[in-house]
Length: 312
Image 1 (cartoon, rainbow, N blue to C red):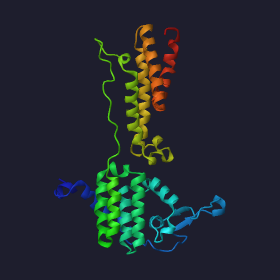
Image 2 (cartoon, one colour):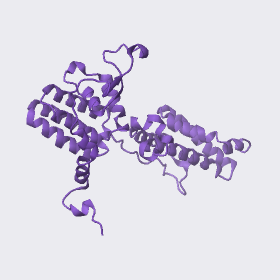
Image 3 (cartoon, rainbow, N blue to C red):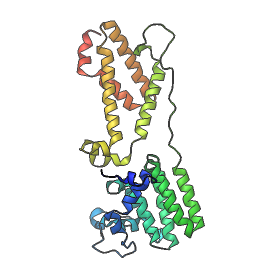
Image 4 (cartoon, one colour):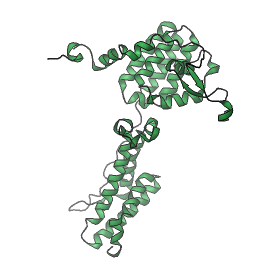
């Protein structure tokens, strides 16, 4: 019987085993010998032609580069050489070729290979930008945040107390959980007796509840989920889970709204449901919830509903 890594190391957590496998991987072993301070050459970096791109920026636009060179440009020795647009683009798209864990390791490796305080300041600057612009990279997996604390803070504490204090403040902000709206209650008017129906719901509170639900879905969206229309590719479940959730929920809501109308046997009841949906659409519009509004309008304009025009 084969013994798994976890069974052979019962004292280690799954995350520690993941770190161990990563640090012994050929990918990481090859990067250990990388030089982050080498000069630009045609082998390690290619820039876009400034004239062809009509680029009037202070810094040239990178067309392609080796991974060590990308990290070097991200954390330059001279703070004046920082390119905020490049930093923004890198943090936005790094997940297409790196995991957050790999990114953290590369930042640690970059600093460990030099004693320059300016490089440390650049690493802290990048960490601050990363945590402020994409906090979900941390909050969706607290193990990554723990590792950042362990590696970066430990390294900076040995070399610079002021920098370690700054880094500690940055990571503390990242550790704060994102806002989660408190659900509303009592959206159904229970003053009457008998079976509770959709038409019994308080329209205003129902619109608020739907808006809170939509807010939760849209807040979970990650910018990387939109690269190359990844929600249409075979790997969409891994690459764009939140986009798919929004699409599937939108389609289900259309089906539910439509079902509320067509399942009623009498024209009088169908009219009551349709009137309620129109009121709900107006309430959603007042809340600026256009996703919910379009779901209601799409349901009302379905062919099976349109054919009922003579019986409503």
